[in-house]
Length: 233
Image (cartoon, rainbow, N blue to C red; front, side):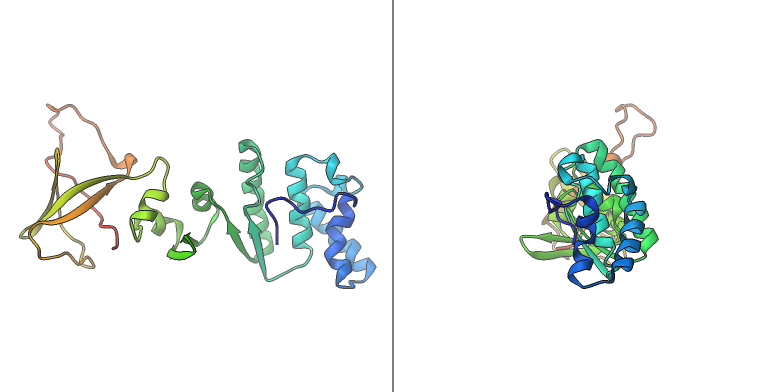
């Protein structure tokens, strides 16, 4: 496990911090030496092994915490908001390092973060939790493009999704959503189940990057909105 607060022993050198878990498991001394040196080299802190945590920067301390975890050669690594105490520039660097480390180790990383942008950048699969309840499990693309509910649709994405109230109306082959100042016409996907109620109250969610602003007299001005997706109930 890699903690948010690093959890390094301040009175120990970097070498001893990395080796601590191995010593508690009575790993042979020569094996400890090999594993510590390999982990330190992988995290590019092999020149810091004789220093103590107070002599290191925040990024260096985080690398020590990561090295202490990877020497255990575990099947699963739990990273509890490991970059939240770093400044923005260093977080970007450490994200790259973690992606590289994940590819090299070929092990499962469970990465906990409140930064939804970070989760989209770093994850192969995302689990979204809200108040301890599972909201959705999927790839970053699925979470972003097919949110399961309004919470996910509004939480994932920066800037966030815009929501508009409207009424769903059955127009035969085409369905309409009419609201204050807009009308949206769309054809439901085969997997979408829409109520037969001719005037159901609904919300439409629009990503800012999907909005195109054109002059009112533009010949290319669309007569209706396209590419509509419904958010799961």
